[in-house]
Image 1 (cartoon, rainbow, N blue to C red):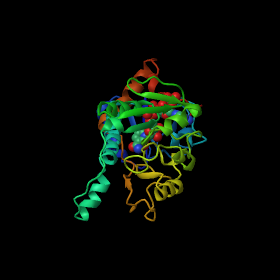
Image 2 (cartoon, rainbow, N blue to C red):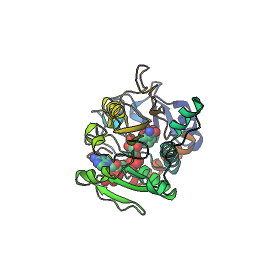
Image 3 (cartoon, rainbow, N blue to C red):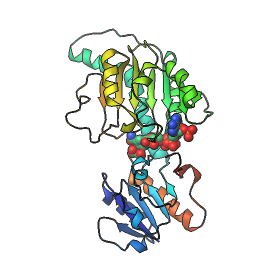
Length: 315
Ligand code: NDP
Ligand code: OXD
């Protein structure tokens, strides 16, 4: 068996080294060096060059080294073989940390306190209890459910929204277009953990911001997006921040990445920017997931169901 490693935007060396260490019996091939395409049986990829995977005649499985597969599915030549994505407690815990940190930053008014500190003002800001703050999570998948559970434990009133109806302990759930208006009207802090698909592209725009709760203890509602930049309409976010429909935003993902130096988000006083690092894929933690997947495939066990990407829905 041969594993082709094609990683762009991250350091491929650390993945290759980790795969070789974990599976010395496997021929690990570096896609940056000329290789025998016919020898490749499995591929571990992050944003591989379009067309690369289509040129592998004996490919059995593609392992996407992150949770989101939008970049991969955008390649029209992607071969029709099983496609797995990362589902792992390490990645999930990182995302939950980022979400909880940002919800608390806004709930506890950290940007406002930081501005007051710089102005040497001993301020007094309205500070409700977590139980009086409504956090709405768009996307009740692996990441959304874990973030919901952590926020519930902190005492927030959590609700969630998904494509199909979901039962998630401790939270109120809504589904589909029919459930969206109620979900938004009861949300003070909106957390987007959706995949980017034909249905979700541009969903975080004017029409959605109009329907969020108002007013809140922070002024308007707060938007937190760690899903994908393509979910958001950045001109609409800026307009909503300017007229108070949004009080603030935490954005980890952007329409264009890296975020261009000219973007108004960089120095926007109401916006917290992080550089698509909400949940990094750590080779040390995640290479083993791929190796297990290869072993399962070779043994005829199939991939773990929760990792399998459904190409019809796009996630
Ligand atoms: P999952 O596939 O487990 O869950 C996706 C959720 O989104 C599901 O609840 C699904 O609904 C819901 N959903 C999909 N389409 C729609 C729709 N049209 N309307 C309503 N709900 C919808 O994904 P994960 O939780 O593992 O990951 C979510 C995303 O997070 C990834 O796709 C990726 O883009 C992003 N991500 C970002 C990272 C970062 O560092 N910023 C790191 C890792 C992931 P249903 O339950 O009905 O299927
Ligand atoms: C992912 C990401 O999808 O890092 O895992 O964005």
